[in-house]
Length: 115
Length: 115
Image 1 (cartoon, each protein chain N blue to C red):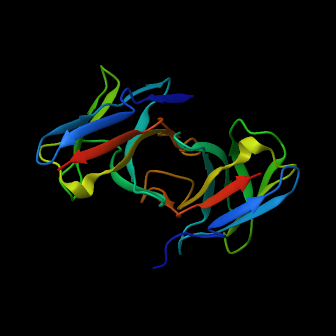
Image 2 (spheres, rainbow over the protein chains, first blue to last red):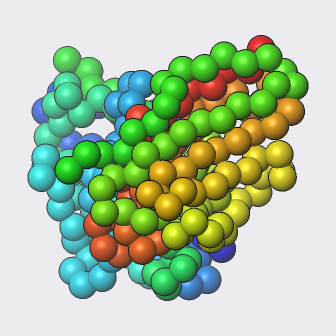
Image 3 (cartoon, rainbow over the protein chains, first blue to last red):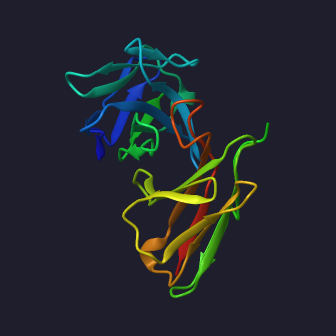
């Protein structure tokens, strides 16, 4: 079984400032890790994922996350945020074995960008 | 390539009633997963269907049931509705169970309100 902890329920950040959204996971098996974004009244959109290989993964809109196995973390970062980044962000984990790839989500972090 | 379509988008039901939610998976996907997202929470896994067979179930009572059709579309049925069933119900489709290939594609959800 897996679990995900997102320590910050809300993060307010000034526009063009950097941001880090924290995510820690627990699992007895090897995992895949994901960040999803949810805009108001919408479903979830995949932001980025770690499956294997390089521990630093990037999205097309400037976000990045680093898989740290020793600290069981997968924190999300962006060097300069924009108003359009206002959304709810969910960290998720799944097992990496075929048949055990169901997603387990954290409780989410609401990112609010202050103009 | 069409995405995941869920219907209806909104629904109001009375406690004790039954409800059916529908999901059309993305073209080429053979797996459908259902999630319940209560207000202010992360999505919780309900169950997953792979090639018309249930492949795993979360911690939900038997009054939550589902099925998958030969065209890989899916239904979620909830009997004897309770107030706590009020939530956003998300459907996600994928290829061959899960996360490794192109990951999960989520629909925009069905907002169920039980009064």
